[in-house]
Length: 270
Image 1 (cartoon, rainbow, N blue to C red):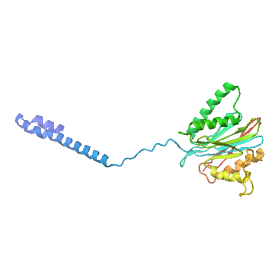
Image 2: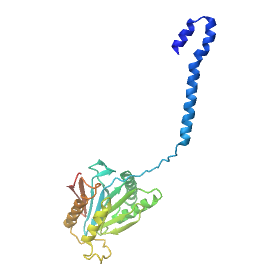
Image 3: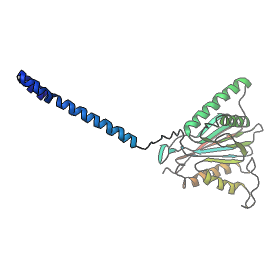
Image 4: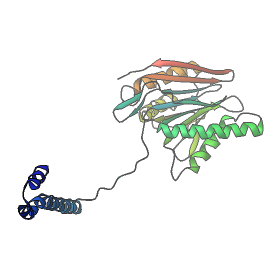
């Protein structure tokens, strides 16, 4: 265009009038191309099929939680692997959270929702302490957790919880939950990606020897503390052989009247 303009300036006046059409020709060509591109894009968009975006706010970060209640203790255990799909996000992520001196929560599922749930429970427990000058017992915390989950039932926390601790008599207690607050007091429970592997093993070890005669589950298991810890280590070692979302480390908390003990065991890291 600059070259055509220089040529136009160099020509006499009579020739300039005739060359104006030649100078305007590139502009008409560009306008024609822009019009064709516009109509092509418009027709292409009209023929495209509509793709609706699926809004999915949830994720499953895997992991497994187990709790066993005894006559004077409660064992809560969980692995430390947090993953999504085939990617491991963290190998040292604790899934066990202390809510009170005698109540410990272990959760699997979507860990962002788990953190939000823990924050709500912590704030409500703080209000309870200011009003009653004492900490919640484990059964009271179990009811609070159920109410909190049920309140969010239309947009639930994607968290599967096991609450373990000691009741007012000093006996172990375990409460197992679904995502919308339905809960049950049991002697042992497992939640998470490896629960389908661990629960049959626990049923075999802690229920009737006959698979045809399975009585109602007791709220307290007949195991001693050391036997319960060994059983937890065994079931997690077995689950890590089959479940890719369980592994790295095993964190075990043992609640008794005199305090809480913590153990860590290495698991498979592949």
